[in-house]
Image 1 (tube, helix red, strand yellow):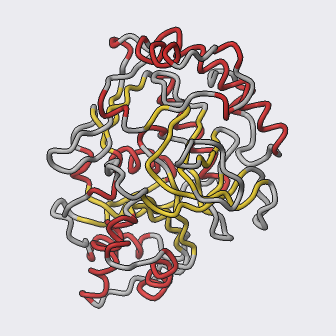
Image 2: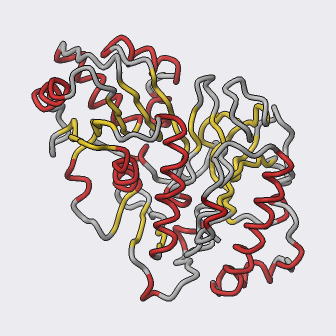
Length: 358
């Protein structure tokens, strides 16, 4: 488990296929047995499938849970008194949300792994940070939405930070100017959710004629493509728009979800999302859920060794994607690399940052 220093000492993109498969099989066997023993609902599911936990030899063997199951049931593998944080997906009004229950160990593991993954992209030094969202989002510190959790998670990379939007979701031009003047000549980290950045940062920059110099900036963003797809804003246009608006050239997307917080899939310099040694991706064919081949589109299954307090280690998403390759990306990182094609047709909206209705 994650309290084993040997596990957390592994560099996030260092294991080639055979080593990683062996590592994940070992960790997931332990996790599956743990959840089978401690989560009654999970035990019922595996028993109904007549799955023998002791036979786990690979990721593909372990039954996946549909991600929407966390909307329907309170799934946990810990006593309620051990819950220190409840994470929720950010559903629209009237929509059910996922509820993820964390104990101290799981929360700490998520933070440690997120730190290792992101540091491998931006370096180990903390940076001045502009959060492209509103501080009002963090008022309830006991129950975090996906957006709030993302902001808090990425804030660990800041040595000084401001929120770029006011409580009314308006662009704080004066605050941003003061912050950039204070940190003139330094690298600046910008973090936010894709649709929030597009609507409340980029479009407001254009409307106000404000062109801050962020040529030394690093932007990390994720979620919200559903709304941008409706506006015909493909990812390459997003990057071009950011460069034209404020000179920022290092723009990296990440793929992740509240049901597996910490196991983010970061976009590399070549434009592909990468699975770290702590997670993996399988593409399933919609017709029979068999494993698709590289280059073949299907349903994204996400795997993580981080969920210890709830049985979220093997989940079937409602997203479509394709694995491009493994161990041979030009960026030099080991592991699978892939693209997300978008939401599956007729899939229920999972409710992450893309459900923001403002």
